[in-house]
Length: 77
Length: 247
Image 1: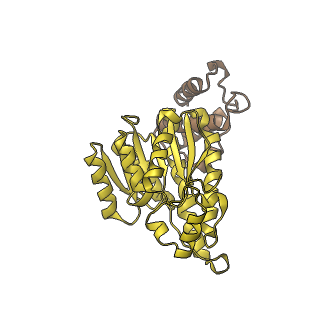
Image 2: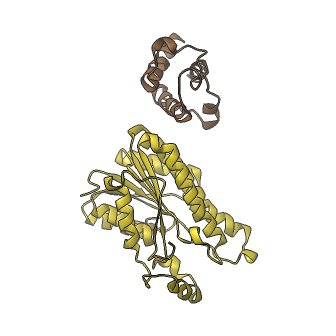
Image 3: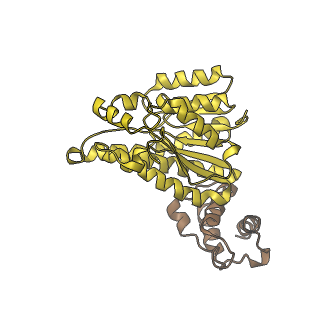
């Protein structure tokens, strides 16, 4: 969990230019981290590469918060 | 060379306008993935000519109306060349009939390839273009998509749809350095327009201020321009290359 969270956090910090302290499980990409729809699409793409998995469009639509992403990756790994 | 080091994927490049676009891109320095649906030999011929121009070619079969085949085409092309800088959505078909007599499958066939095909291919390629923060997508529409044409309700609707899709894709992808433009050819002499009746051909010629039909390379040259850095401040546009038919 901690390892996944670290890797996810790094990607979010790089991509969205936010401070590491803002990346909390409950943080919403759009509302709290200033991402637009396209940023979220790109984040999902980077997560796919980072964790070497395919995230379907249907699943990607359900990822709204940092916690959603971390949980999803945990389940799939 | 305007396109040195660039990789282009041209759908429907076995003949007609697509073939000419592939060759013109190669003349300007691009390596080219030559997509075809049914005409393998002709696609290989196009590829051979690209190679004769000193560029690399890669032949890839796919029906652009089929999502899985499109995914595979993009994957294979990326695997072969490592990137796609330029996508030319050119593949298109006609199934002409009067609206009153048009069968549902004639409508669907044309929509699947001409409009859905552009959607599927653009979607599949945009991922890698977004990552590299650059890309050029050029969709081949048609002037009849702007003006309407009797006997081509399906084709006209698909080509008008391409213009709307072009504008939306341009807006969605602009922040990632990707431009999306369309070219709307007028009457260009190809196998496709050969099939039009003499009546339609005569009627169309009367409407062309430059008083002649166009050639595939008239379109290809505009496509090369849109693919190049010279067009970097243009996106969401539809260029009419039609001898002045629609102004």
